[in-house]
Length: 263
Length: 300
Ligand SMILES: Nc1ncnc2c1ncn2[C@@H]1O[C@H](COP(=O)(O)OP(=O)(O)OP(=O)(O)O)[C@@H](O)[C@H]1O
Ligand SMILES: [Mg+2]
Image 1 (cartoon, each protein chain N blue to C red):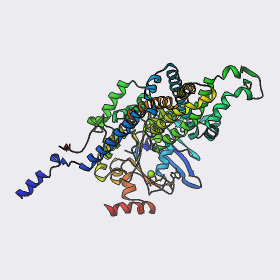
Image 2: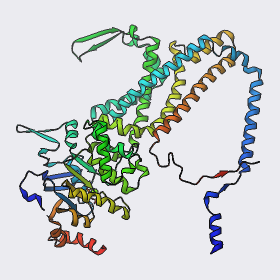
Image 3: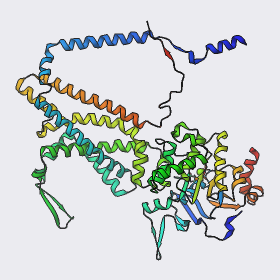
Image 4: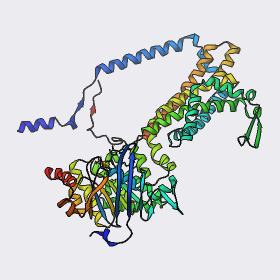
């Protein structure tokens, strides 16, 4: 099931990625390839730079060294001959249009209904006709089990329902890559399952996904590969049964032991 | 157990009554009586000259003055808001140049009295007899005679709208700052352009905190327009003054102006209410009351 080994051009290629906030170096040389259709779960202690790395992939944060490529295109920069030029804001916006993102705090537009939230980018950014966008939005709402909530405003929905709408919104742009930043961390425990179920379905449908989460169970069932980050570097990675079942690095063992105690 | 159940049905809030609040009703009655008596005293006081107020209320020069006041307010407010939006966005942008220019503009126009600004615009020709469009240290592209450009009307519009822009910029910036950072991030992540993100996501949410202070600004503006009388514009107040300078009926003529100002302000308050309700949509609890209906008991 590990598609990284297939040899096709990877969907994401990150090389020697460094990122600092002031003097605080948060990413210290990340190398990571994600194959097309692969589901990668990123684990790691708080402050290890997981969110930062995810946000670098769609250039919500700029990096200081190294490079990131998505679908064969370098993010944020373009090579003209031997000269690497920074892209304009507009060109960066265009690059982001094939990357879907789901946030910990949902970030739905509160003044728009669920349906309006979903069709906003397809109509306004991708220029789809409204009717087509709405038909696809209803299809996506059905997929996340919220057909009857199409006209509800975000504040009238539970956290789990909001996050499922947010997933539908990210899917509406037909992304080649989906980024999830702790999508269940803001949810009450009984609502976590409904969101993970939706994500498990997506993983089964061949979507390329990078998921930052603390849900070890999800990693075990849905991930093709688990990446363990600590202190701004990738400490260990491999198939879930290897990393979770038989971690090699002491820091991975320490991190996982906390979860095993809890369960 | 039986009695518990019986009690349970009595405690069902669906059958709740609202006890009559006699104290509040008495207070209402008292306040209404005070207001009625005050109105009666004012109405019968001959010094207010109500017949004269009625006679001049819709007189031609008053109506022209009212038109000038309303026209100046609308034009200056529209220009001021548009420029204010641009200034607010510039001030919040990452761009140093635009941020600094916007900051300087706001600093200057908020820091000097409006009256002085109006006089300055009106007398611009004494400072700069000609206005020239040219490349810095380079060739001249076009030239205008300042006296042709500056009339009392254009001086009033320039003065009022540039001053208003400085204040509106801060009102709008406050509104933009009140929008959750995650919203900006979401629009960025979906590849929206800055302009579209502002128009579709950021400004609609900022409006909730922009509208109330803008209502304030608008009402101040209606009254600030009376300053234009110093540059010979005949607004509402100036027209009223013109009449009492001839007839010496100072109080009745001021009452004419005051009543018109209050009518405009009332209309604006109602409109503001509608706008606020529009931008409050999506708030929890709008449209569906989630508590049981309560029967209100009228005092007999
Ligand atoms: N905008 C920022 N400005 C300054 N420092 C930041 C910023 N964002 C993150 N950091 C710092 O970068 C480090 C890594 O943060 P990051 O959010 O990537 O961690 P994380 O692995 O996602 O942690 P968590 O599991 O708590 O979400 C932290 O030390 C954090 O304080
Ligand atoms: Mg994080």
